[in-house]
Length: 108
Image 1 (cartoon, helix red, strand yellow):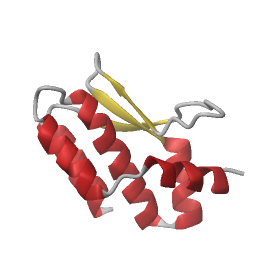
Image 2 (cartoon, rainbow, N blue to C red):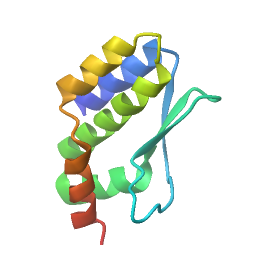
Image 3 (cartoon, one colour):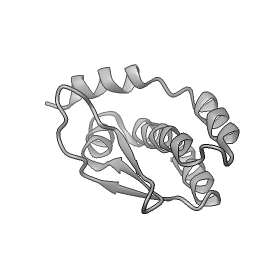
Image 4 (spheres, rainbow, N blue to C red):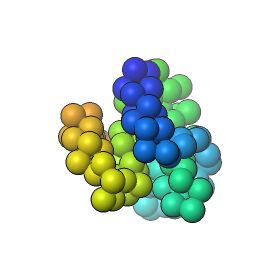
């Protein structure tokens, strides 16, 4: 969970709130997270985070949540700390294809 806490702290430092929400079913696409510019909020898909925690453990779920927050933070910080968000995404090793494949394997 340490990575998720760090991602949330970085988001807060840019005035962005992080929340969990059921973002619906976008099959066949997967919507891990969404940034709402008007509310300055990043929503992480609660359904996916919960299933990852149940099936793969707290660490995997926390890493997923951190990666999702950092990915959306790139949109939130365009022109304002974007380099820090990009560096954090690279450091976290976010690979959307890994999370997409894992989600398809555990969603049933």
